[in-house]
Image 1 (cartoon, rainbow, N blue to C red):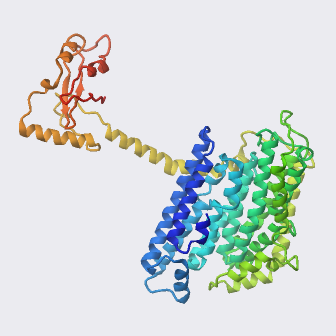
Image 2 (image 1 turned 45 degrees about the horizontal axis):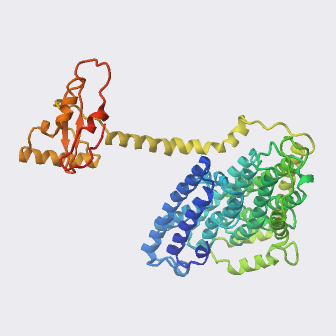
Image 3 (image 1 turned 135 degrees about the vertical axis):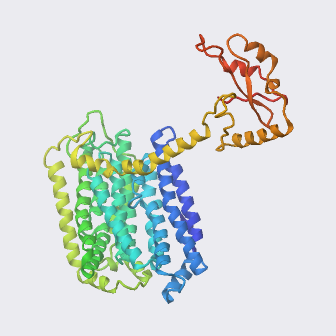
Length: 563
């Protein structure tokens, strides 16, 4: 991951990119005794390879046009003026190819389903993947290659993030596994980052990436503390009343919930409000793209709802399952929670405290922000309407938190069904994306594989069947070897095929079966035999395995079997 951050050309980035994917594959599949862990690891690996194929296309286009893969040289060449070889089509293909790799790595629509399944890995691995490494790599690369993207590609980036954040938030609202709630929240927050980058809020998107690392690591390690204290129980329907039993975990996780919900003066408040301000500015400048503001504004309310829902179900009220007895985790687990809670509060502080740009992170990002044409007006409108975006975001968050408190705190929550129906069931099935992928890609691929296997193993007729006797299996090596052997036999006039049959086999075949017949003789030295049954309806089938034991190849090797 470190090499991915400091690499100065796209080829080195790609190599590190793949190594991060390989490491994540082994981490997700850590529990080898669980079949679900292996499936989740394979799913993550394959879906990331889909994105990486696009990444390779983008790299190839960049090399063919610019003759270099050095990122600084590429940006300098485009900043100086677009070269004639870079047509609109090639610019679009290059940008979309690089972005497709980021879509796979950062679990964006339509490749977002692998990340929640990656929760099969250990909880510290989940905290690592979601907070600082794998999923952050996609957003980081979009930010680093930001000047390489055309305006059309950036618009695709914005809408991809907008769709992703909404889909993930609605799915998180109905999850019952504490880690899956956090997983879908990660996907949604990554959508916020992509949205910010797409509308020109470079500093806002990367600021949200940095602040998200602290409170998301806090939330995942807090979930791990809950799982440890409740003896590996992570079903929210069985938890409850843990606030008095696990006070350190409860209050530190509450800080993480407030931060991700955008509570004032916590780290998430600065970054999320900046994202929404840029979305508002872009929507005001481009009125036809107003959804790029209203969808994330609504999703900000959903974020507060599902995060407070998780906290209320786990820590508030009474225990819903008497068999779940929680206890506080040891200091080796609680001390990191306290440290991460402190960073989740004040990592974006500056003076004045309400100004995110006054913080150290804000100043560093603004100094490093690349100059990109076409976003001057949206950025100006974002600065002018920043306060309005803050007020609207705060109102949406308060509304979401109030709905969650009314449903799960102030009154006894309704029983959460094991198999929800209607809209809740639709969201619980992840918008049926897995089923859609299975219908479009998995099932056709499996059918094609079985068809190919059938071609490789298609039966041939008997030796006396003129219609099929000369039919060869052209899909296998044996088929080609058979064709070669047949040609040689016609030239040198091989002896009768019965001469290749061992005398013992002939004696054995007298009673229940006819003498075995050699169909083919391969250059590798052993024969393929076929035994025919004497009579129409024998009492029992012939014992083919015993027959083959009596076959003695001329080269002294072992007889082969192929039925």
